[in-house]
Amino acid sequence: TGDIGVSPVAAAAMTGFGLIADTLSTFSTSAQVTGKAYAASYVSPTPSKMTTAISDMETAYNDAAGRTTPDAKKVNLNAGLISGTTFTAGVYKWGTDVMFSSDIYLSGDANSIFILQTSGNVVAGSGAKVILQADSSGGSTPLASNIVWQVAGFLDAGTTSH
Image (cartoon, rainbow, N blue to C red):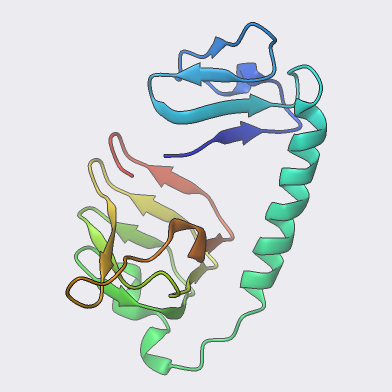
């Protein structure tokens, strides 16, 4: 759920999405994306927005990479095999790939911050989901905007994973 984008490459680099450009060529839509798809090759103001988005992403990545993990239990949790794991707010760090073939859970409230750092890759199996759940009955759930995956390698998201 949300917008996606690529830069500095053209929209043609987003293969497999069946993109349909809007009438002004500032974004595209796809049945596979709940949101809009943007690329540096689209008309103004999209290229400048992409530049801003990349700068913001770099700032967030560097901030997340600089966070320390004070809780030893959150370092190399389950050797990176995290299927079925429930996470509470905090900083998690792996020196391995992180893989899940079934759902994982982030439990907290709207103020909870989750930072998941890996020096490797993240592999989400087909159908695997990241579930946001309230940590108390009737409470709010964590906000997606408070979750940061700081991945040095690549993300391999299996079909229907989200």
